[in-house]
Length: 73
Image 1 (cartoon, one colour):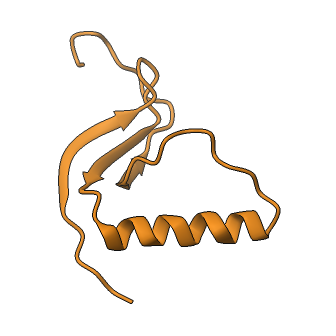
Image 2 (cartoon, one colour; image 1 turned 60 degrees about the vertical axis):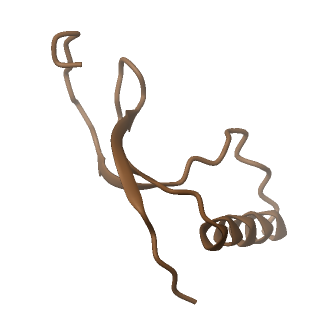
Image 3 (cartoon, one colour; image 1 turned 45 degrees about the vertical axis):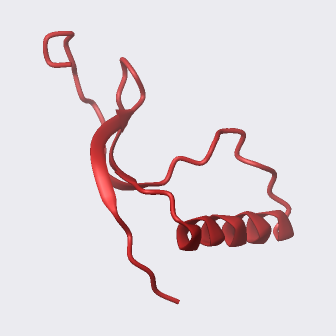
């Protein structure tokens, strides 16, 4: 099944030690249905919950060895 995805807002995960560049996705029912199906499949494989709230996004890049300064943030 396909659905439209609305993207907005660029950010990074990792705080002072950023490791992932991402763009946010507007939470809509088809995306939430996909999240629920993913959770069910993970539980069926014996995996527990992630432990963090779901933050719909598209990962743009993994950042390795990035040096930041407070001026750059």
